Amino acid sequence: IVQLYSPLNFFGMYYRTLQGNFVDMENLFDLLKQEKEVVDKPEAAELCLKGGSVKFENVSFAYSSQPILKNISFHVPPGKTLALVGPSGSGKSTIIRLIFRFYNIESGSIQIDGQNINVITQESLRKAIGVVPQDTVLFNNTIKYNIQYGRLDAQETDVIEAARGADIHNKILTFKDGYETQVGERGLRLSGGEKQRVAIARTLLKSPQIVLLDEATSALDTQTERNIQESLNKMCSNRTTIIVAHRLSTIIHADEILVLKEGIIVERGRHDYLLEQNGVYAAMWHQQLISNNESLENT
Ligand code: ATP
Image (cartoon, rainbow, N blue to C red; front, side, top):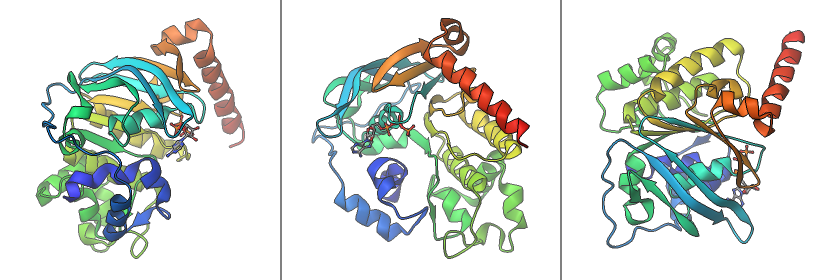
């Protein structure tokens, strides 16, 4: 049952409701009991996963009355990468939440491998999807448990392999109690970069066909950033990936980039094409180059 609900704490209102980064399981379940607006249809079937394609067809959505997404369409073929960029509040994270079916949409459809997510069980949907959130929630438990959370029946050797893949194994060995070290607010506190690695390890262990990645806005130092990027790239290769990107340098190789503004796709295409268009994306790109140079000059 934990597996069933596990990713709910990562996004949206659940996430916003949490106090700080650390929660106890009990609190998590209380939160989940309160907010369950999406229910499986009685005839809901299991998702029949093939390559993990994700398709939006004319999706419109509002949290209350104010429309947030307007007529969004895109298709991410199996194994490809879609990046979402745009100003704050433009609807990027909302798209991610909808794929997870935190909310039902008003019109249009969302399909995974050709199956409308409204008519499949949430459990089977969420089993197919791994999430790396901006800020990872750690449980007051051992570091081992925190990684194992990606697949609770995983063997210890698999946990270690995932930790290696996320490049955090060696770090864990430096802790006094190794994998049994207590983390969370009642234990060892991990840095932002380490928490992200825990999230990557969890996802590696879960080994989903589809990965949703909400890039951290908070800056990590450049070296940490680069190392994490490597682990992320490894995790995303051969998986369908949808990434909310804040640093455009990380999505140069994305198969498609959607530029959102007030819930509308204003530009779309690959990085080079979008630069040639000299529009919103190009302006964002040049703006980032300038601020990067400024921060370099200040160091
Ligand atoms: P950011 O880059 O700041 O994360 P975003 O592009 O991901 O922004 P969303 O989080 O998708 O934007 O939010 C889109 C709009 O929906 C915003 O105006 C936001 O205030 C609103 N919104 C988000 N979550 C909720 C919610 N649970 N209830 C009501 N409105 C919401």
